[in-house]
Image (tube, rainbow over all chains, first blue to last red; front, side, top):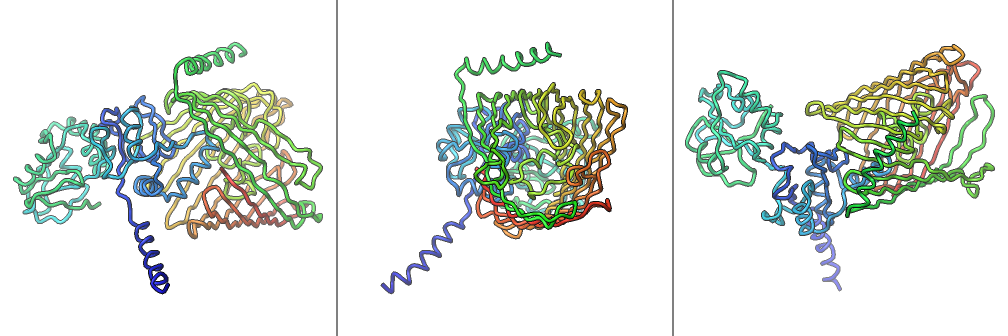
Length: 258
Length: 344
């Protein structure tokens, strides 16, 4: 009996620890979704899940929820900046006042994957480990800025990034010439980087660059591994890759500062 | 005009017919809200004693049917003044508060046909007391600044302006005859054109809105209404403010309407996920509370509320309101309200 009594707080603690463990969730779309590479970004995802965006470039956007409350809670916190109760309370009011239907529950991860793969405008989210790349792909991609390991810079300013990726000649504060390396237009990592780091869409960056007669075309690499190789070979290079990509020793990631 | 109505109706019915003819996925959503109110007022505006009262908050039930990805139908039924509950001699009243078909071609272009609230500005958020900051409504909503709802057809939409701003707009036409709203609005038919431009940056939201309206029942009186609003959120604090102005043209007798002006600023503090504290200052010419039309008395209201939200949809609130009038023949008073409700 005494052991049972002693075990109870341990079990309780274990339950609490398990409940507190955050879920790693990712926003997804079908592999053939017209939203891929269309510039659909994190603010649009938030608007779609809050019922303020119903169409994207003529496509009906249909967000769906995961049936698992823990996954849903992790998603609304990560992508919408809300608590789960706040999200449910928001939709109770929104559905009534504005006559807009809340995202429907698509079911478990397998159902969410099937829903986004079968419906062009569907958006969903699953645990990162549940993502099946034959059915769905990431909608919003995390990225990190990378530089050569020999570069003494410990961070990179947003201003320098803007100049570099707009094709303007620029130097690092230590005097090294900046050599930006881009991913192809439409690549979701480029979309995420352009919107988050440069506060512009990739198309706007490209248009701004093309208007400058002195701007040289940026080297574009088809794959993230090629971006890493290019940065590893050039001390002044700067690029960006997905947050989950493994880096080599001659490359380091640096934070962006305002 | 009748031809225009019939044409519009037919245009809207074509896609509805297509939706029924094709195999489409429909989705039904049902919900509503209900509550209970107890209020105790120190005296009325004439200085006479009053008795505390309790009442049902009107019960609303709605259903929203999504016929396909672009067409939906919404119906809301309201039941108020339940005779078993109220102390008055009310008989109870059931009515269709809203009922419309909506066709959304894209976010920039949608139509509504039927009976619905005007889709304009932040005002529409103040209709249902259970989901508004306080049971006591803001002055602009309670008076003739805002048309509430009516039978009509509306074209509306919204469009992003840059990364952080948005413009929304509506063109609304109605022939009445039934108009439900607050003072001075019953029995009117009207048309209006409105817009709202708002933007958010670093937790700050600011916007302007305006609408103009022609009122045939007042000899085609032209009204102009403007609104400036803002919101800032930081550290669990949310500050909102709104200035609303209105200018009424001459009525059919040639009498110029009086200008309208009202302001409110509210501060909400999220104590924790379940508790919210709120204060609001209201000032404006208030026809409803002063009991006057034309030359309404300037009214000042201080409101304090404490809300308990134990789970989404459940609310228990205690409120205290202090009302004062500039007019010397009107007596200010205090009012305490307890409100319990559920949104489902």
